[in-house]
Length: 117
Image 1 (cartoon, rainbow, N blue to C red):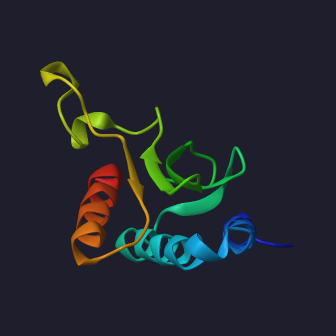
Image 2: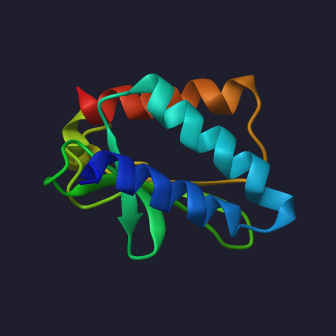
């Protein structure tokens, strides 16, 4: 019997393969960055998008998709107090990117670490 974790990872990999030539490599790099930063996250499809949950049965807390760009975001199941203070105004919960450089990788890795904290 196939492990749910393996099945989820395979579904996410298959979804990334459907991304346009323009963003497939960026999506794969983002997927690998998320898992390298938080190897305990469980990848699976979430509303047809690559998503990442804190456990195999838990809700998805991170996701990304291909639009005009790649959008990377947090779900309503994320503990936003780790990201910012909603009482002080807006909290960043979504970002758009067309490539990943060292600065954007560092920012995403920081967000992922906070989400799993």
